[in-house]
Image 1: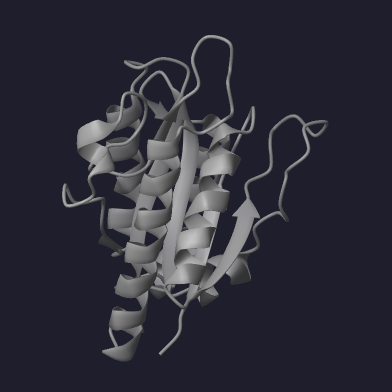
Image 2 (image 1 turned 180 degrees about the horizontal axis):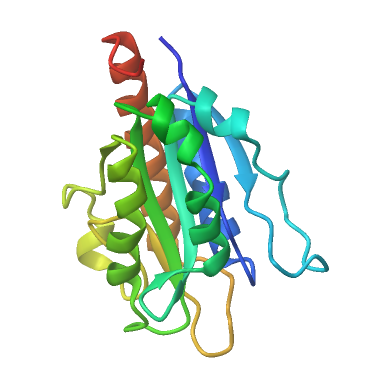
Length: 194
């Protein structure tokens, strides 16, 4: 049984968008449908690489990968504002028992990636979603010298803002997408995503 998995992100300089695209590849490899959508910037002059998210995109998915850059150990204000406006979906329980995971990017190795991923999980938990990360069975978690955590895929862009994902970061994002798609399909098949 297939599932539709929403890859929802906000990206300022392109690193989070690059992770979103790799996650979508993993989702497709697992046999699910990836729908990539972005959250609008407060700066209307900043374009999105993908279409803007709609309420229907959020409520019609069976799984969700949510990404944001790090802002002092938290998600970007645009991403927080998006979740602050999902009360209607919360009141109706439209995301309960749907699979979810998070991903991020920072400018430095100790830029708050893991703190951000944990903070990004909070609205998903309030919506009743089933959270997942990346198990240490993925060898890249042991090998990476840049991004990648058990909480979700990450990228470290460095002070120059390098948007090019390392091989380990790419592989972890694809593996995360596959796992999210598999969990989404399993929950849908078992009737838990209703």
